[in-house]
Image 1 (cartoon, rainbow, N blue to C red):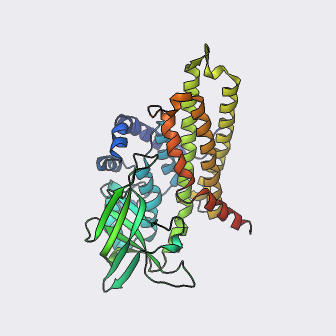
Image 2 (tube, helix red, strand yellow):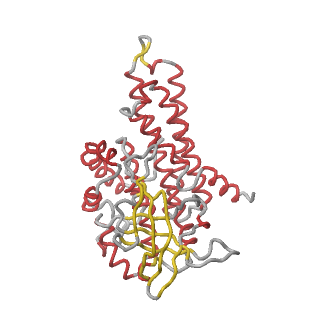
Image 3 (cartoon, rainbow, N blue to C red):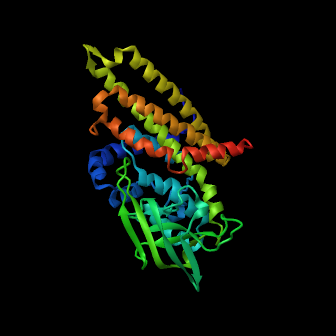
Length: 382
């Protein structure tokens, strides 16, 4: 079906991204996967081309165009080339919105030029051992001491935390037994602050090129000047950005489903069994027809949700619907596609195996499918 989501400007941007991915990512991707991270030099390259600062105001070296559709194009073109750029996605779609929304004038002058240029890498540290999706259960504490907060605690599953220069940490600055959501604050911890350490790089099933680490904070003195927004207001800030974070997962799911379908169609047309191509069997045709139909349904839902996000109308419940449907559809589609590869689908030298492994996390991070169902049920008054 013809999509109407993008303008000519987005398509011009797409052509640039496609060229960058083909020439600067694909030839190096295997080495990056083996290293378990994207190199810092790649972020600086993207920054020099203006790909990281589209939403950053022009006065700080950005493009001044806070249009989420540019982020969508970046994800789609990476998936089209059978690669993922997880830490880039996290920086642009998850972390940058907090800086754009809550940084004061001084913080903008300090950090925005580096964010636009790719010289400052970022992460956001929410999840803790034992908290998971329960953000109200955060135990990391920050106690005010003069012109600083003394930060203590631990975080886990932190994407991009290995190289991050700036880490937005969600910490508890006050406790209210009657309202667990109250008293959370966003503090920006900078690389090199005494007491801030990086722990294990976690060995994951998929998304190998995306570093995921544990972080620890032992009496880290974070200046009050590094607080994002108001003290105690973090829970509302997190809720405000969650729809975009969940849409980002949905965008990647649909783009990777399309990549799985395309690579499978190409494979079954060439692979022969019993003297016939795999594509010639009715079962193959039916399986891929079903994948294609469900993909179009997911794409239509997603495009509508993206447009509502751009227009500032996307509700939390509708973002949950998009994430739930798109990620569950991805799981079904990639499983069907891998089956058509037979034994070769289990070999990592075939992209479908990586697509299969990468797909498993999408029903977990940014809120599990079960949490999405709870959110949707609440919107129904249940």
